Every structure is written in C-alpha cells, then in structure tokens.
Length: 299
Length: 218
Image (cartoon, rainbow over the protein chains, first blue to last red):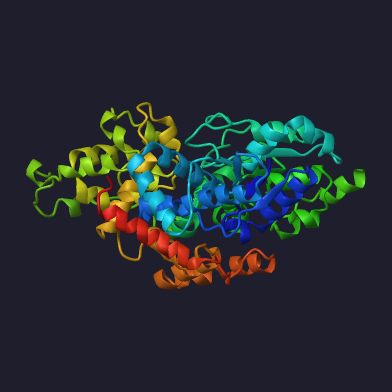
C-alpha cells in the first residue's frame, strides 16, 4: 500500500523541519509515500468560522484528489490512506469525512460542486496521522530493529496538542494518550510523565490575542522544566512554533529564563535511526539541544 | 512571580466600577418579547448543534476551557443564552473569538454537546451579520485567511500575518520583525509562494457550492 502525503501549508513554511524529518524517517523505514498532486489548503479553523459548507467543500477536494490519484496509480489496492502530519489538517479532513457521511443533503451539495471541477468523491479515503502510521501500521518492534543510536539519558516530555487526539478518539485515549511515550521509550530515551500532554498551546491566539497565548505556552514550558524535561516533542507545526519561537519573549515577561528545545517527534525518531542532523532539519530550530554531538560521539 | 505584562497590555483585567454602573437608571433585563426566539433553532440546525437543548448547565465546559478567563461570558452561559435567544449579547461577545478550538469542552461534555462546533456556528453568524468588533484581530484573521485561500488555493503564513498586521495595527509588525527575521534566516518563512496549479478550480468549486446553499437542497 502506498500512502498519500498531504503536507498542508505549514509544513512548507514554518514547519519545514517537520516535512524534512518526516520524509527522511519514512524513507529510512522504507514506507512508500508520495505527495498529493496539486493539493489545496484544508481551511483550518479560520475557514470554518466564515462558511461551513465551503470549508467542507475545500477539504473534500483534497479527499477527492487523493482517491483519483490512487486510481491513476492503479496498484490494485482500494485503500486510500492520506497521511496528514499537521494536526489541524488532520482534524479538518477527518471532520469533513464524517460530516459528509452524516449529513446527506450537504453531501449532495459538496459532491455536485466537486463534479463541476471534474472530481468525484466516494468516501473511501482514510485519514491517518504519522504517529498512527508508525505506531499501528509499522509497529514499534520493527522500528526498534532500525535503531542505530539509542537516545540514552534524555528525558523527553511528549506534547500531543489538541487536535490530533480530540474530539474523536481514534488511536489514542483522549484523556491520557500514550503512543508517543511508548515510542520515546522504544527509542531508548526516558518518557516523562506530565499532566499537560494535551493542554492547549493557544493555536493562532499567540498572534492575535498575544497575552493569552503567551500565558498558555508559559504554563506548558514551565511545567516541563519543573519536571526536569530535556526537551519537548510535538506533533503539530503550530504547537512547535508557539512553544519554540516565543520563548525569549516569555522569559522577558516572566523574568524566568526558559530554554527548552522543542523538536518534532519525527526528528527524534530520525536521530535514533542515525539520520544526519542536516537531513532532519535540526539546524533550523532556534534552540539547539546541546548533547546531540555527544550522542554521535558515543557510537 | 509577577506577570508585569498583564498590566501594561490592552487585555488587562478591569474592575467594573460600581459608581459608574449605577449612574444611570436604565432597564438591565430584557423582556421576553425582545428576545430572538428563532435564534436557538437556527444554531441548533447547523452542523453538530443538534444536542444544544440537552444542556443541563453543569459548567464542565467552562471548567475545562483553557481560555475561559479571557471570555466575557463563559461557554456554559453562552449555551444558555443561545437557548434563551439573547442574540445580540451572544454575537457581540468576545467568547466566540477567544475560543481556540481545542475541543476540551466537546470531549468532556456529559451530554455530548459539540460545544466547539456550536462556537463555530456562532462565529459564522457573527461574521455574516457584521457583529464582531472593528479592528479586532481574530475575526479579521479568519476573513483574510478566507480571501487568501480563495485567491491562491493555499495559505502562506508569512503573507497572512503581514497583511493582517498591516491592516489592523502596523506597530505589531515592528514587534514581530525580529521573530520574522530569525525565521527567514533559518529558511522557515517565505513571502512568495505560487499556490496551486489549477487556481480557477478552487474558485469554481467554492462558487458552485455557494449557489447550492442558497437554494435548499432536496
């Protein structure tokens, strides 16, 4: 089965290290994946606030494109699995799929709209998150076989964010998700038990309602620091941006120095698999984790 | 620990002065005839708003909300005000815009009300009827986003924020210029992007869906 990769807008700009590391890890693990041709924006949270049906139409175009792309490839597999790494895209696509299943009239309207641009949607596309793919399809055991540099002695706080696990319980419990922690454990690092795993980072509020966003992020960062985390790993480009890029500002507001490296979980997996840092986009982050060089020396 | 920035910025807590409130004698309670009775039905009809009536006012939504202390009405009150028909108050409130759609309330609600989706429905109503405050960043971001996707098919974070701050408050650009520069230097920000290949198809798709919405679908 070939996965269809839906990057979303963020992974092409602020989330570039996520894209680089995701593609590198999937290549290393020999998971076949190709980018969705001519994908468009999923609409995120903003489109839904302006027009509901159009928002679903916009997201449905991607689903329809994925279905037709799978048909063109013709590898005899009826499964269409879209991998959406950005949590916002992931949720919007899942919501669209469920909405079109549940509401018949709206489904008709959206499908009619898609027909005007020569696309057809059958509701076969399944939307997956890379965490889901790594955990359920590939399996931790087969990832463990590929590990070349176990990340010994690093304490990792896994931050799941909101939209990957809420509101639909798909592959992880909503109240206390564990998949990332199990993954971190398999990589040789120490997963950290912290209660703010799924607490909101504020999303776009950091840009629009600055103070509220800063406060939410401060709480996450200081709690992780208090519990002795060496780094936080995230699954969403917006969470990573919020947690990383405003740290100097939060430090100056609160008078407490916070320097916490924020990595994508794929970067951490990539490090354990022995992929060079440059290929994982680690040089693009603001705060460097000091021990990466030492890790390489060990092996 | 002091949050000194709380006091200097615009969004500080303001203690309502009792003297000022009581200066004028005016009616502070709405008569039933002034309420918009159809409002409840309108919101309940929108996607995933069906269970609105089953709310038992337990307040779990307000308790789990990470940003409820920035709201003028808590989510619990909003739900009840929608049911009673306080249309102007609800659509004018900041609550709708402060909601970061983290879905905590939707997950916790014992009655299975999809509160985040109700908030979306209210946001749409507020934008449609022009209720949101002028030069308030959050609804402006939504409409800028909408226009950008309509034009390019994709969204560009750098350009989106640039155009938002330019039209709202150029001072914000100054404040964030250092961050923008650091992002650019690490190759994480692009101001120019081509967008999708078939841009006309997005416009065609969205306009055809718009027309369908006006006529009731059978």
